[in-house]
Structure formats: structure tokens, C-alpha cells
Length: 476
Image (cartoon, rainbow, N blue to C red; front, side, top):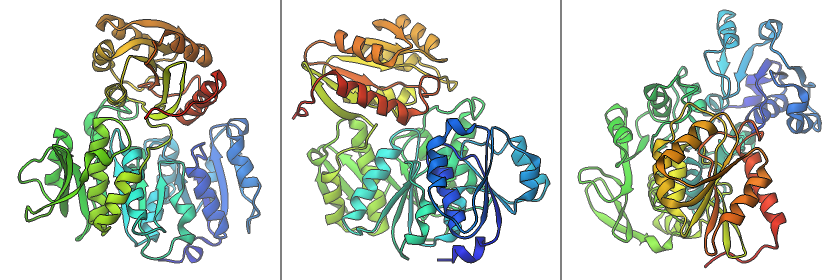
């Protein structure tokens, strides 16, 4: 591993976008601890990200961090030796263009991390399932290597953890399309790059172009080197077609086995099977070992197992992780049962496709809580499924809610109301749910407006549900 101290000590580093998810915070702390002169610039004012600022101010660095908040200034970009931009800032930003014109290098957290760490990096991307799959991969790998690190788009900074990572430690990353954009110019890629699936998302960022969105996702493997692996969904027509663009090895996963697509892990009938490059089959475990609901999670498990096996994890570790995994907070997370009604928190379902998967995973009559901020997505397919799978729908107000409400009603779904008060929506959903039913928060949209982000939405949901009545034991 390169010595980061020798690279950044005394450098002027401009962190562009501190954000509230921890990425910018991790970059700022890493650079400041290595002796860099760090300046943070963010269009948000201090009151919008006080927790992040408090975290920085609580630590003593070799050089105090300085701030430009509520605006960006040309003088800060001229001052910098290096600009590290937050994933929320597109490369098309005029401030990024200014940095280019000034001849300043523009990096992102994971381009820096991949430059500095030459150990095994196992990355997962995709429209849905990437958080679950990355965490499940880590669960399997850590049964083999307890020092394995889980980081990335999970509010954990891999760069900040870098000085503590021992050589050879497996690092599992969840990477969004925004984060992957930073790997194109330096032509970097993780050792194993997996794509769970692809469906419309972030069309506001990608101007309605699935081609642009897919191009960002492909960066998880496009610049791999000999010995690396792309892990692709055999049953996603778009993702599987990318095999022809993979520069090195391709492995597969899926529900069912597609002849000729191997090696990989496949779910056939009631079992997980590892099929090596020669076609030899090895039973991993029965699907009954999986503790999280939904057929989509069988695909997530198969993807995770493929990654773990390619990384070198023994079959015993894969089996142990397959069985011990209990799911991820905010992803179809069971909370409690109140008066015969189950509550599930699926706040990170921010696309119609992921909400459809949640509706197909939860049993019994469902009262869905959905709606929120517009990302340029259509809700026709979700509305059709909701009409069949839900007992009722309570909508949260937001810029996408008018379209969602219209399409839900046209499909025949029972929309019981639109709410600009979260607690009122939750109580209305609870009242509407029949005995033996479920209240499912799975918005199908972004969170901004009523909430700071999707995690804030999930935190409030937990708190409000906990205030309704005492918690009971989960269903068996």
C-alpha cells in the first residue's frame, strides 16, 4: 500500500460537497489527518449539515479545516492543489469545468481509494439489491476473513478507514452510479465488480437516458485487469449483454441455470449451486437457509456467493454467511407487529422497481406508504402491481406524488389519501390495515422535501412506529 501521508501532507485539498451521508466527511478527515490543508466548500449552509461540521470540529488536526459554506468561490479552486468532489456533484458542474480550466486534478473518494489500496476490492452496483448484496457478501467473506471491511454507499468511508486496513484485507464496497463516474477518467476498477440488475433510476441526473445510466454502472468492471472478474446477472437482459464488453473474466448468477453461462452461483429448484468453468456442480446450501424474505433476495444471495467464492472464500464461509445474514436496516426491515399488523421499513426503495420487489416479498394484505420526490420515473408498472398486491395505499406528498396518485387510481389501486404529515400517514395506514396485514413503507421515490434523505425517512418511521404501542416479537 502506498503511504498516503507522503502523498498529501502539506497539499491544499478542496473537498467539494461535504454532504450528509458521510462520504465528504470521511474524505475531509482522511486528508486532514494526513497533514493536508483542507478546505470544505458546500452550497448548503452550516445549519443544513451541522452534524457533519460538529464531527470535524471535534477533532484536532495538524492544520485546522477551513470552510466556504452556502456558496462556491473561484478563489478556493485556484487555492487548491487537488479537488475531491462529492458524488452528488456532477462532472458537468460549471465548478468542475472551472477546475479543469485551471489545470486542477479532480478526484472522488473511490478513485483515490483504488489508487492507494492494492488489496482485493469487491464492489457491488445495480439499481436495486446492491446494499443487501454487498452486506451479504461481507457476511460471507468475514466468516473467512474476520478483518474484512464493508464500506461505500452505506455511509461508511473506505478512504477514512484506509490507514487501518492491513495489506490483503478484503474490502467490500457498495457503489452507486454517481460514485462509479469517478473511475472513468483514471481508468480504475475493483478486482471483482458485480451488477445486480438494471432498471430506470436517477433519470433526472442522466437526462432520461438509460444508456448514460448504464454506462456509469458498467464502470464497475470496464477497466479491470487480468485476473479480475465481472459478475453479471444472467437473467437481466441488459446486464447480461454487457459480458461482451468485459475486458477479462465474466462470472454469472441467477435464479435458474442458463447453459453456457458459467462459472457462477445459480438457484435451481430448492438449492444454491456453484457451477465452475468446466460445468461441474457443487451444492452450496438449500434455499431454506435464507432468512430474509422475497425471491429477489435469492438472486441477491446468489450474487453474493459468486463474489465470495471468486474472492477465495471457502465453501464453509459462504454457507455460514448465507444462513447468518439477517438483512439490512432500511431494506425490507421488519420492525414490529401491532394489533395483528406487521410493520416493514423499506425506505431505501427509491425506484418503482424496488417497490415492486418489496410488494412481491411481503405476505398478506398490504397497506403501502409511498410517494415523494421526482426522479423522472414512471409509475405505471408499479401501479399495476399495487392494484393487485395492496389493500390500500397512503401517499406522502412530494413532486412525484401527483403522477403516482393518478397512475395508481387509473390502475384500480385503493388510494386512501395524500399526507404532508408523516405520522398522520403512518396512523392512517395502520387504521386501514386488516388483521394479519402489513404496513409497508416502500416509497418508490426519492426522499427530499419532507425528509433530509431516505435514511432520515427510515429513522422517523422507526421512531413513529415505536411510539404507537409496545414492540412485540417478530413473526416466525
